[in-house]
Length: 201
Image 1 (cartoon, rainbow, N blue to C red):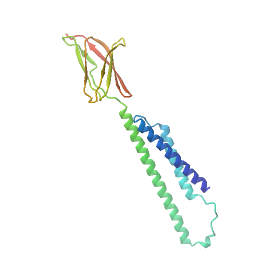
Image 2: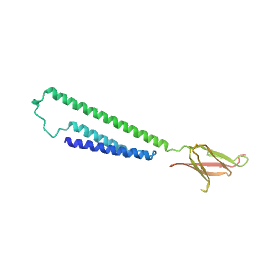
Image 3: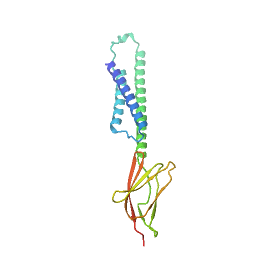
Image 4: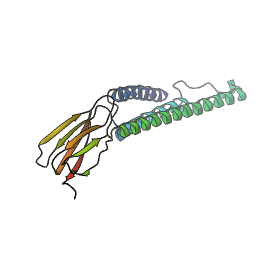
């Protein structure tokens, strides 16, 4: 019985290390990848199996029968029992700390990935042509952000390519109407509508 618990503990530890390496490499390749609930459940399940195997290895009786009690002094037996209990408690405590740290790192990685997945752009969505018949709109966005502007007929009016410095990009509208603006930055995309009104009286 003790060998089964030891085998369970070893298998759980090997599987947990393999899953941890896979998840770490996956996050390095794609920083925006979110950790799913299934992976969290798998991590916790492997940790629980490891703890069960560890505690069972200490508690389960060995294959060999112990010698008669009269051959062992009472104080020696009590010392052995206290050592086993203290070692099992320390093992459970270290396993709990390891699981807490892994859960915290997974949560922080997931939070940073979700926060970085939202592209932030800023520009006025309702402007009017001035007396000279144009309206200049300034587009604020992170570096290397590309803007694609289409009219109401889905025709591309212009494309603005961002630079590495993240400077504001501007476009001078000449015609009133409804426009659709799409911002691209790597694999992040945001769509917004922009209305250009006629010359205000």
